Image (cartoon, rainbow, N blue to C red; front, side):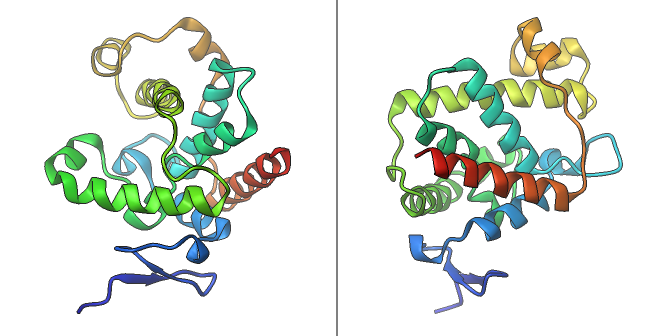
Length: 194
């Protein structure tokens, strides 16, 4: 059988086909996500817009939309794209073209991540939907602010955006090392709230 694991900088060997929570470290996730570019790198600026930065924004939007939500669900929002630290980020049309194989890997990895950090392997449907709602708002903001979409095009592809979001959430591109540090710090802060 061919190798199906990846060696992480922590020294862990993560089996991509059968991941276990014990092989997952937040430092590996934060590092990987800080270096994975969203939009296939097709964004304005001198730094790529990373999945880690996107995850921080999604968690902020999620908290804005759900002000009294429990810390564990905030943590789930922060970790919503965690599997991409080993799978990379693919735009939605590519994920759809690949089909079930990608989804199966993603589901196994996110379940292991959730268990590692004290969350249920599968999130309640209402939480999953709420995180997706925040994720779509983030994508809409990103599309217009950094990915070259006009307002009309972004509205057509991602839906219209309430003015409060555009006023409240501004995207700033930063070096991966800063984003990695902030992602890890936010994770630690949320764990301390559990």
